[in-house]
Length: 317
Ligand code: UDP
Image 1: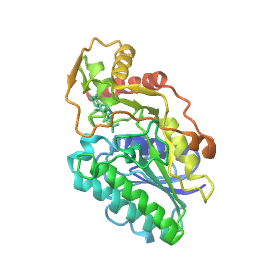
Image 2 (image 1 turned 90 degrees about the vertical axis):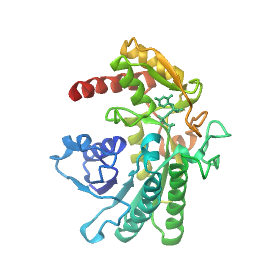
Image 3 (image 1 turned 180 degrees about the horizontal axis):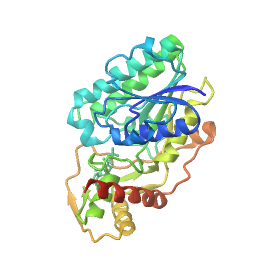
């Protein structure tokens, strides 16, 4: 049994990871400032043995004398474009200062640390599918830069702490992930479409809907993160984690309408600035080193997600 810190542990992905780690028999310290994380995501974990929650903003140091940990998963950061663009300076601070604070903590505790990096480091990719060796096509000045460049700098810090201080670091690059506990209001495409379909509202397709994404079910993703954390010490990544099945946004809209039995129509709205035209992970490295590949297809994953959203919307009414 390990003692594990999960920053962003009250977020969508973080709460699933905390639960998985508890199920594996570990003690979990969930660190979250509840900026975009939600207490409701971890309420069912609060009385589980070995689970502890501390409300803390990782742009400020955590106090090592209060801490013991073998492993740290650094997930904290708003992840949906509308949310991370709402306060871009704070997003950059969370990515950069947060990574720095957690790396310093890992160093002082002798803990292994994993960074939740992102496919956004590839920007609007000129190579397709994206392998880890592709260096990306990212704007330094656009509205996505606070997130993309912040996450790129965080990766740099991870590799420098490994080289300079010998910290056991791991970097995942996470592609679009979906599932139960997505925030219905955070503006992501899967949550928006499901909520709109269930309410009978028009589905909001940005642009002409021909842009693509590759959607990974949350349980597959957390399995990949745990495998990466427990991979041999010399393996630092970066490693893509995502589902290589690629869909257009228009395809996704059609699937959600069909699965919900909705009568929603579609409206086309302007494409946001710097919206990547396509995105698909090459996961050969994860297959080879982690023996990992996603098991849940989009239709099955959407069914589970729709079922959760039905209940969530009923609770909110
Ligand atoms: N999108 C859309 N309608 C929405 C929300 C998003 O068409 O209501 C599009 C968005 O422009 C992007 C894709 O869906 O091309 C994925 O958006 P999301 O915000 O989920 O994540 P991203 O991959 O862009 O970070």
